[in-house]
Length: 102
Image (cartoon, rainbow, N blue to C red; front, top):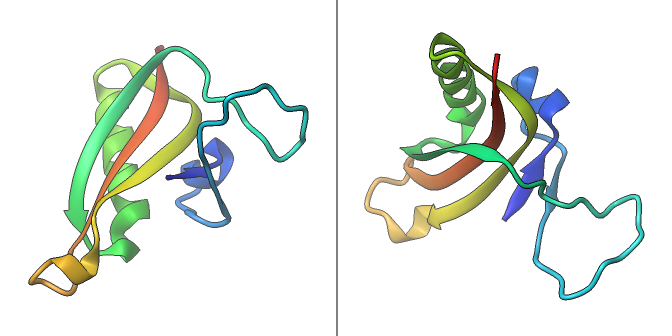
């Protein structure tokens, strides 16, 4: 899984991203982030990797239409790798982003 900062994703940028993993202990490190508790919007996509920023913009617009706003970093997770699919342009991923009512 990866994490993209809220600041970068709101600008349509998916880089740089950081790999994430669960660890069984608390660690003090500026490069470690804790996924905060809260309500998350979760979406599954099958599309080209290059379309992730555009899909994020569409999702953000839909959330705003429903009275929510992003309030945190985006977390992604691969759900199907390109090599496993017949369509070489397809990429499966889930993204989740913390939201709040406006």
